[in-house]
Amino acid sequence: MRKQVAALKTLNNSSATRQSEVIVAALEATPAFRAAHTVLLYYSLPDEVDTRPLFQRWHSVKQLLLPVVRGQELEIRRYTHPADLIVGAYGICEPTGDAFTDYNAIDLVVVPGIAFDCAGHRLGRGKGYYDRLLPRIPAHRTGLCFPFQLVDEVPAEAFDVPVDEVVTLNGTQSGESLAPPHAG
Image 1 (cartoon, rainbow, N blue to C red):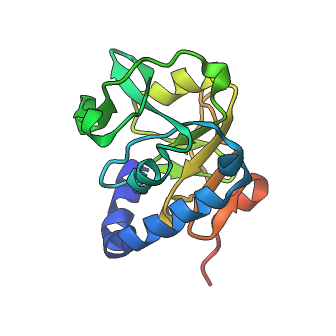
Image 2 (cartoon, rainbow, N blue to C red):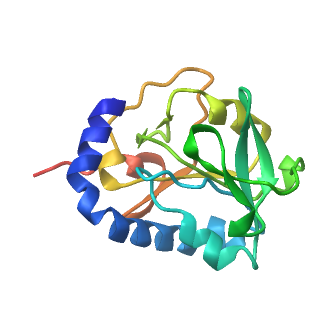
Image 3 (cartoon, one colour):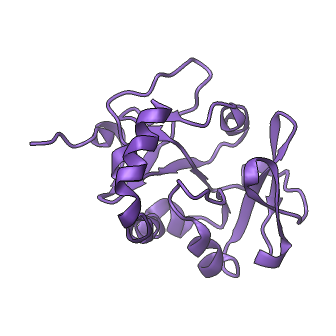
């Protein structure tokens, strides 16, 4: 499934920047994002919805957090400024700021994924970092994805943690509305 989605990404690459802008704006319009004071984001890789504008627009308004890979776990740190980011594991930018351990204070987690399905299951990159982290955070979970990343079914195990909603080009979708539109 990861290879299939990667091939679709290549076909849709030319419109990815504009699509990212629309998807990020849709996230910013959600009640969960508007109400959140503390948001755990991801710093996007080139094949993901571009989250960098969120840091530029919101770092002085909301407490923004980012994950840092530490062995087999994700540690959460405060985002302070772009100059305080270093390239860490897997080529992902990570903050050098203070560790953040008050998981109950997190209002929203924005989760990356290779694919999402109508039940909110996500296909990650296969290392299980978010599946180990998310059960410890009792916050609303939102996935961001391009339309081609919405699939009929993502294989899920008992330990996989679904998202509550997915934001894509068509706005926010949750529950049954997460189902991809049928061609035709």
